[in-house]
Length: 199
Image 1 (cartoon, rainbow, N blue to C red):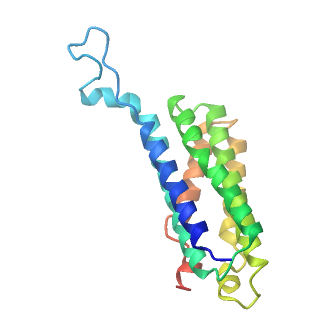
Image 2 (image 1 turned 180 degrees about the vertical axis):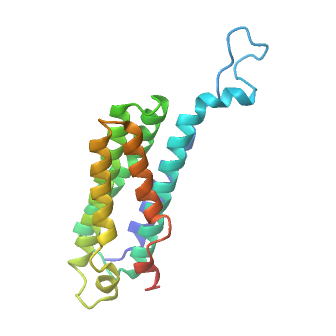
Image 3 (image 1 turned 30 degrees about the horizontal axis):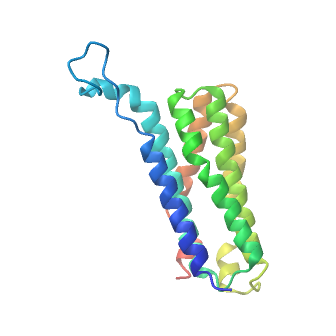
């Protein structure tokens, strides 16, 4: 089974996710009695958008990381099957929830439950990515280019552990959870060199 349709569909879904996220960045409304009709026009009015923009930045980076790593991984893949297609759809499902989690967290100024749900969405996306890699591993030989590049996937497993710790620590202080989510992004900001080297 060819992989081109899987890659094309995934690219399209990720592009839509990014588009939806940026549409959540609303222009600040004008103060009552302001000379402008609808929207504020001062730099100070942008302060109200800072939590939303901070959420957007982290989510944009995370989505970009998933796209980058998915792209490099698929170049090492020789073939796919039905199980891989469903594992990929499972990953895209969790990524499709990112715009909702991003907006909820930003618009509520990083209160506990929105930050927890944000972490849950990304820990589930990480688990889904793990399932995708292992469904691919099942249909490639142990000495294949894909299997050699995947290795033990220590960084992927560590990411899930850090997300779990971040979710738990949100109940002490949501900013600790957010900081741990950001740490995972920093870990992955450089494209996954395991697969990059196989190209």
